[in-house]
Length: 207
Image 1 (cartoon, rainbow, N blue to C red):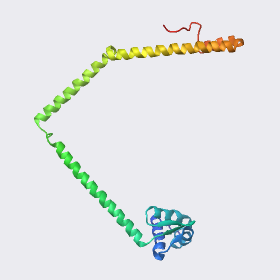
Image 2 (cartoon, one colour):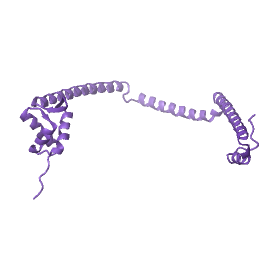
Image 3 (cartoon, one colour):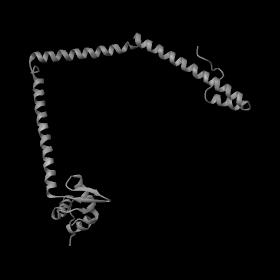
Image 4 (cartoon, rainbow, N blue to C red):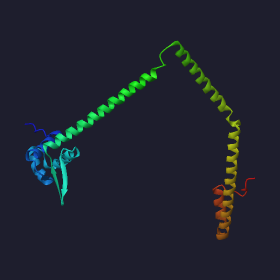
């Protein structure tokens, strides 16, 4: 004998709504969990099903003292459906208006762009100008190294790099002097460390 098929979520929602509609009363969640199985909704599913109804405004809930009560009347569903329909009607009206605006905009854009020999000639001329423009841009890029503005930027960058290099050289000399003063007994180890990191005896300021 095959197992009895369980209720789908929509069916569970419908059965839980029937509990509210038939009694038109207020319920605590624990009361609904006891009534749910009588409608084929297992108690473990009642909370989630009722919450889905609350989310869709088909069931109302309110906290009174420390308890949370749930209720729903047939008129609640009717009001919810009417509100949904009103919103859909409004969205449809807006969409139709926007569609009409786009059609009008398209028609306006078509004016003066009808296919003709003159238009084809103009389009070909435009393509030729764009091609020539791109070619000139490519040629111009070849001379960017001789651009006075670019050369000036390079000079500024070189000066900044030169200053930074001498500043770090000065920092290195200062650090070496501090190490020599505070750790004179570790001279050999320090000299070995300097060589490992690339600090040689010929380190000098850039001129």
